[in-house]
Image (tube, rainbow, N blue to C red; front, side, top):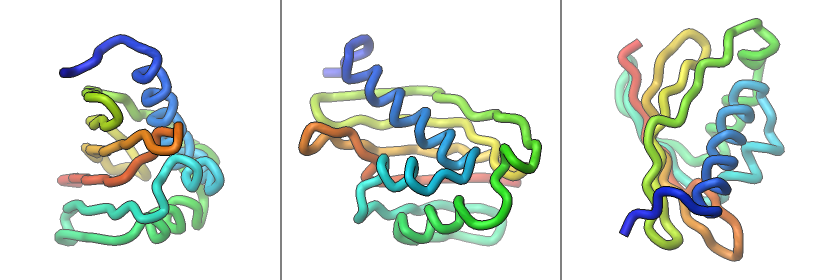
Length: 125
């Protein structure tokens, strides 16, 4: 069963917002807090298919000048959210450093906290 309007949804949306701000601001602490430490990311861009652990993603998001400091407009949105019990999926539209991504996050609530346990991404840019 899908729950569409409850407190858990609000908490998941807050995790998604932390995901957006963590990337946009290059905030390592925020990203580390919302990802499970064993999370893996899989995706495709013009350079091919990729798979890497979350530590590599966080390092990539926090190296160099973050989009906010570079003056890039914030353009990230939650497209869809689906939750059943202690698991959820979120579809996102993300603009990051000039590229448009579609991200799919899988989340799980464990030990009282929602965390991202998997990420898929795609961009044609």
